[in-house]
Every structure is written in C-alpha cells, then in structure tokens.
Length: 437
Image 1: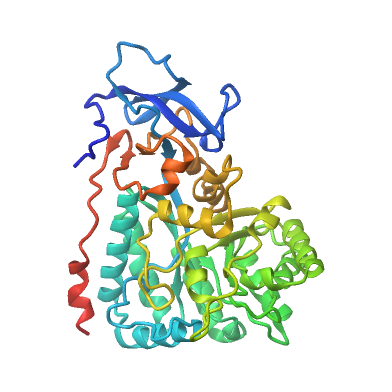
Image 2: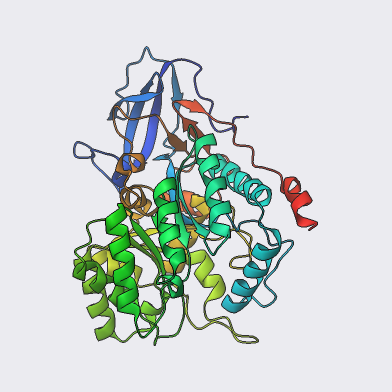
C-alpha cells in the first residue's frame, strides 16, 4: 500500500520530478550545483532502470510523472554489519543488566539451547523482511561460528541468500574467537567459508601471541581468496588496542583482500599520540572501519547506578579525515547485545548524526549508509544513483536535512526496478512460537 505523500505512475517509462538527491549519492554530480550537499533533479525511469538524471524542471513534459515536491530520493541502503542469526531472541533470553558480559552469557545460553536450523531460519526471515521493507538492498551479517553452530547457520544463510536473491544481496562473515585459530576447527571453518562464499571474521583479543594468530588468519584468507571482517576492541578498556596490530599484520602479510574492522571503541580512550599513530597505521594498511553507534552506546560504559561518561563509539571523524573508509550500521537487533532496533538504516543514520555529531556540515553524511559501505563490500554500484543502473530508490517526503533527521520517515516509498514494493513490516506475533521455548 502506497503512502499518502505520492503515488508512482503505472507506466513503464515515467519521471520523478523535483527530487532532492544527496550529491554524494549521485554517480556523476559534476554538472549539478549542490546546496548543503543536496541537488535538485528530475529522474527518468524506463523499464525498471534509470534512463536519465536531469536538472529539475527539464524532464520531457509528455512523460507520466510523479512530483516529489522537493522530497528526497536516495539509493537503497547498505547495512554492512548485522547479526541476523541472533536477532529477535530478546523475549526468550534477555540481558539482565545491559552489560557486555550479560550479552555474551545470555546469547551463548540461547544458542546452545535453541539455535536449530528452523529457529535460525525463522528469525533470519523476519529480519530480512524488515530490512527489505525499510529500503536495504545489500546486507552483511556476522554468524556465530562456534562448532557445531557454524555448519547449521551457514547452511541456513546460503538458503536465505538464494531465496532472497531478487530482493536483497546478502554476505556472511564467520564470527569466532581467535583462541581457536590454531585448532583443526579453523581449517574446517576456512573450507566451509570457501564453500559458502563467506568471509573470515572473529574477535581479536590482547593475547601474547596475537601477531602469530593474525598471521595465520591472513595467510588462510590469502590462500583461499577470502576477505576479512573483524570485531575489534569493543571495550572501554584503553589497555585493549588490537587495531594497530591488525593494520600491521595487513601490511606485514602484503594482504591484497579487503579488511574491515568493526567497533574499535577503545580507540576513543587513547591519548592523542597513540590515537594518531594507530589511525595513521589503519589508513596506510587500507582498513575500512564500521561504527555501530546504537549498540555501542547501549553497551559501553554501563555500570550499575552510574550515568555513562562517554558515548562508546570510535574516532569516526579522525579516521575519515585520515582517508579511512568509514560507515555506520545496525549491528544487533532485539537480542542481549542490543534490546532495540529494526534493521532500519534511516534510524541508524539519524542516531549516528546525534551520537557522533556528524552534522555541521551534513553535506556528505548520506554516504555512511549508501556509497561508502557499498564500496567496502565490493558492490560500489549499489551505493549510488546512476544512469543505466536499476531504479532502486528510497523516496522521502522530507525535503531538507532537518526534516529528514527529525522524523522516522515512516511514509517513505521503496522502489525496486522502478516499482514500489509492499512496505508492510512483519508482525512480531510471527515470532511467538519461537519464544515459548
């Protein structure tokens, strides 16, 4: 059912008039003049593709048209760090105190008790319905990969990737402790990842032989053509700083694949000299950094009876200024690591602007859930609006940044191949049978 602010023409070729597009989301913005990073255009759609992007007011008058009245048009979103295998278990396994340890312990208990193929599949399906309805076109999930869960979850994921292929492009990363990297399990996991076209992930820790473990990981990734996506320094403890060691390992091993690091919270706890040295290393090694502001603000610096003293996020602006590719993402959804969320990138960017102060100016902020994460995931064409590309767009009644960031944008239209989709969100009651366990 279409929202009230606009109805799309029922025609194979039509125009979207007076669309306001973030300049950073146009494949070629060189011929347009931007104000606050926004450009006014007419978009011609033909047979499900973008036929032309023209200055506002210049689309052929004979075309059927929908007037956005300066409403925004974005490319579909990239949600590059999620956990759809553990999503939506909150009602059966909560976090009793909101702490990181409470999250670890309760997810482990729920995984051991409940994560059958059917259980994981039902919750993944619910998560993907939500992401799709909100306008996500590309999603990467981390999958808990302690044995025997890795076999179960990757089989389910591969089925979901095939089932959803015409709606959502999916990638998966194996999440495990690098304590296990010298065990036979790691060789088996690497074979599984190659079979399922996955990525090597993991949680890095300040271990005495961390460098040797990282070298083992990078060699395995290089030998098998796998990229790397790690959970890094998700703590307020300034003594934990593996980020620089990962950058050094990337350089030391001459690794040519993609290396992504998520969280990197403790970087914000370092003195200025240590932070700069680490950021310079990250930039030189070509690492990409994804911040998870909602989840980290929930978990970090949580102490009973005390108001948190810091925001829990990484040095996002400093990393970006050094040339590091930076993005934000949803992370966990309604599980012990984050009690809330709905895999809605609009919520993510709205909260990121507040938490990370990504405003003043806002000119390039749209890139953090569109262009940059798509580039990081190796699918750069998904993060921009381009002539000849698919008419996969998210349309908003909001015209300017303040309007966009002040409301949830519940009336948005999601277009896929030039057609509006059904944006109905799944009912939480669908999960009730799983919660009785």
